[in-house]
Amino acid sequence: MSAREEILGRIHSALADAPVAPTVQRTYRREADLAGEALVEMLVDRLVDYKANVDVVVSADLPATLERRLAAAESYVVPPGLADSPWWGTAALEADPRRVVDAVDAPLSVTDLDTTSAVVTSSAVSVAESGTIILDGSAEMGRRAISLVPDHHVCVVPGSTIVQLLPEALPRLDITRPQTWISGPSATSDIELERVEGVHGPRDLDVVIVTDL
Image (cartoon, rainbow, N blue to C red; front, side, top):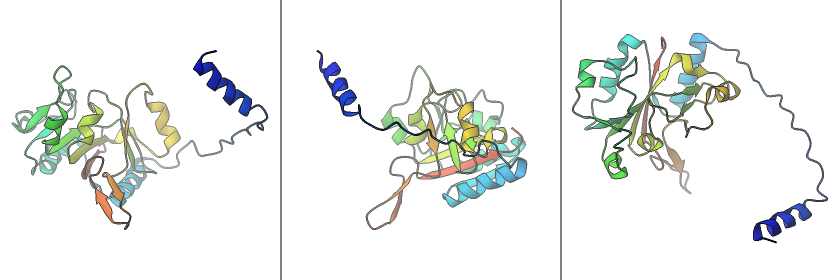
């Protein structure tokens, strides 16, 4: 008998007289009762409560908003698919010498990311009720590291990707992709209940919601 078989055998023996687990009642809400502006307002309310900075714009105003949010950055990283996105596009951003692409064949090191001021990504799905933004590692979002190491994250949220409830979000996600779930800037509290930001992720989170994308 192998060690694995012995361990599993002991577990089976210990659970032999365990009561049958009751059926879980899945009566939680699965369908939203909000849409349009009301859905955006709920997401903004939750994000502001989490101390994120939020802009609600149309796509024509997105490039100027990104330029303003990145004005103080000495450098910023973008995922490889961002430049090909339909919403990315002013000559100023394309030619910006501060911009560094995290290329697939030449990914930035952790040291490089740590010395980068900011990161710009898109997002896959956002849950308004919990104020959660989900990144799925696709080309417009990039590796998890690029959104976790720099201190400042500028995240673009297309309005069409906002849902009200978590059960609505899950079917939109590919479970084989590495996901990052963001509910406000990274923060924790010490034993004195003093809030500390930037412990395990960006200290500053700017969210740009684009209502016509």
